[in-house]
Image (cartoon, rainbow, N blue to C red; front, side, top):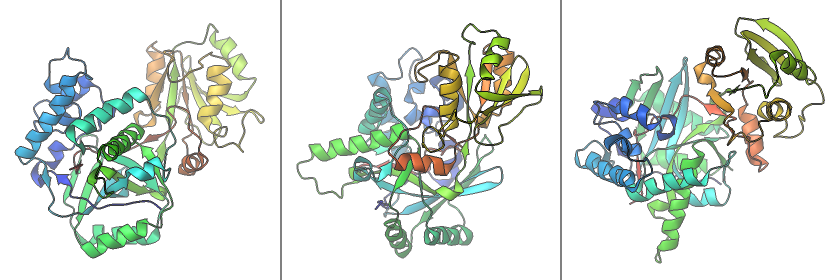
Length: 415
């Protein structure tokens, strides 16, 4: 059963919470981070993207960068920009997008739960990205950013959270520059905390929704510390890492779309002819067409949108991976027709999160940068859970969750 542990969170004073909270380290590059943090000494980007405080020519993986993260973290604590709670608490972190609010329970997940498969994943991680975050955790001795987990909802947990958020003013409550609302409550009542911890023990598994590299890094560093401690007891803070747990019935996965640089030597007419062998094609004109159901794709080519419906027999709905539209598109189009075999390494393909809208797809094609674009029907939460439960791994760039968690509302120290 899953572990949920209260902890003494490091949090910003109310008056600087908006300025301190930042987007996650992996959704913006170093140049974007420099711009975003300019003139804002409170931004957590100074810790999670510390290269912004060093000369631009220094590589983001240079040892100086990690040392700067440690130094900036110490500075934030010394200046009172991150202050540790005096007791072990749980927290609630809610996000509002397009009028819908989802409520996450913030507490520590267990390193052992990750190692023994209680925490399930659906994506492969890259060792270089794992090591980058592991270095960051080692040198700061903290989980600076939470990971985004989901779990099968428990009605009594939902009820307790509902009671807290309707009966108490949030500790932090702001709308970020992207228009998304962020709301944060501290659960201080020990009886309520104990009840939530006990209820969470009924959750058989949790699932990594977003943040696979941060999850792996946090768990692996925790395990390193365990192996290096001859007096290990099992209750040390390094046995746990920071996570926000959202009930699965509150989450929606957004589409994750593809754009390709060329048609593999084919003319648009030849390409359409080959597509017609495996898809039912309908031209939709210049107005944006959005996929309406599973195995229905939209394509933008030559200034026109098309509906593509995969023909019977070209997919396997009994296979948790074969049923995914990312698999169908990869096999029928990217691999068989375009010769794009490895989505992780190919320079001929790029990926566009659905939060940017389908207009971004046509823009990139019309600009001449790309030859064609494909929009996919989004994966469901049940598909994600089914794949994780079966021990399978989703193809690259399958899921996009929005809104992203803001980093810095609470930090977990490994001390």
